[in-house]
Image (cartoon, rainbow, N blue to C red; front, side, top):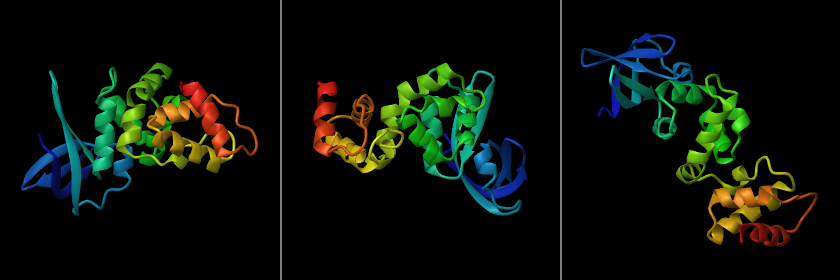
Length: 198
């Protein structure tokens, strides 16, 4: 397993680069988001890689940081999502927006990515929502985005439910089911959310 490559950038194409490491040229597939951030040809670059072995193909996929590589790996773990689809997802939006979209169950945003249908977007959310919330330690304020009502009160309510032992996903889902309009005390929101959760 090749974990990373540090070498000279020799060639850049639409979806791959060639990296010279000790006079050996490695062809590495990279998302569009990586291509836009590469140094000039002839300069050194470090790519964090994942090697994907299939019956008819052995490919290296490269990223500029470990977080992108970890996210790619998580998308690969979803049934029906292969490297090509995972690359499309990583290329579609910045890392923080992708993480927030999955954690918040934003299937509309995910299915707006080329190659991702509604069913695939739903499967990604179902299989990765909790893993991503834990792995990327989303702040309650980020989990509160998209829920109507006072953002501070919603965020504090999510924090309180997590402190009571509920998962970030369950806390957010419970509060989403409430009709929070105007200024509502945090205690009131928590009580109503607990009724939903019990």
